[in-house]
Length: 155
Image (tube, rainbow, N blue to C red):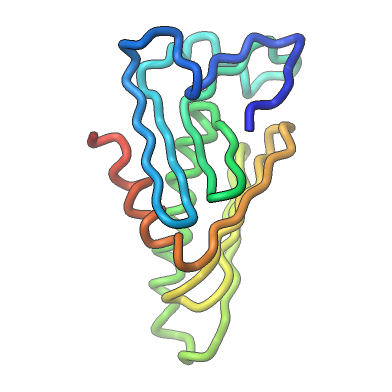
């Protein structure tokens, strides 16, 4: 979802400036990820007050929602996603099979939550950067989403 920012320049992964830009978009059942490493990040003021330009390099989504992320947001998303998965797997030995668990992680850019069983959990994400975006992946989508997020920049 590309927000309406009439007072800002917005560079989007979905609308690269030239055809030669390298865009990576992966998707599976219940998830989508996109990355455009060639977008010029030098104009990104997304972390400052009164920002006048946003540069989106990443895209996250599911079947019925999507939103774009700045470089900092996308790096945090990937890091926190892996951190949640590692934490749940580490705790699996401490839990009984029928026990549910909820684990939250947060950065300046994002808040994320994993909830469910250590082997099958949903992921929620909320942007902390003022654009009011929120999304969720169902447990069946999370394993593929994780693999794609960890290998996105190798392609």
